[in-house]
Amino acid sequence: MAVFRVQKTQNYTIMSNHHLRNKALSLKAKGLLSLMLSLPEDWDYTTRGLASICKEGVDSVCATVRELEAAGYIIRRRIRDKNGQMRGMEYTVLEQPQPRNRTSLAVPNQNRQSLNGKNLYRKILHN
Figure 1 (tube, rainbow, N blue to C red):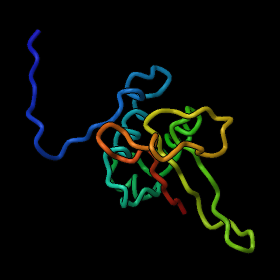
Figure 2 (figure 1 turned 135 degrees about the vertical axis):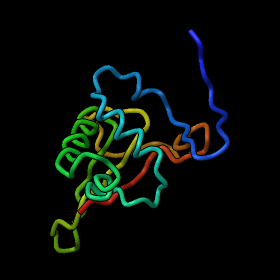
Figure 3 (figure 1 turned 180 degrees about the vertical axis):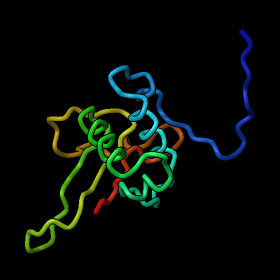
């Protein structure tokens, strides 16, 4: 079988293959996580922002985010103001899953970098 390679000089992403090899994830979840990992950290990571660059709508993106959360690739935390009112959600996106029973990211800073220097932990605000 012939193998065709493309010389990568710009507009490419380096990420872990872990989620791509995970048979428990749907293709939609693999694709959304890959897309999220390929975007710059200042991107609008709200479900509306993600849906704006996908064929799927907001509801489909929300369902896929829930699948990734259940699998440990996304950690969700409610953001509250000083009065205890809900103000949004913070999502942390990981290249490798974290067990669900852990509630915080107690990972030393030196372990937060991937081989290419990208931050493994992306915090996303969702309203």
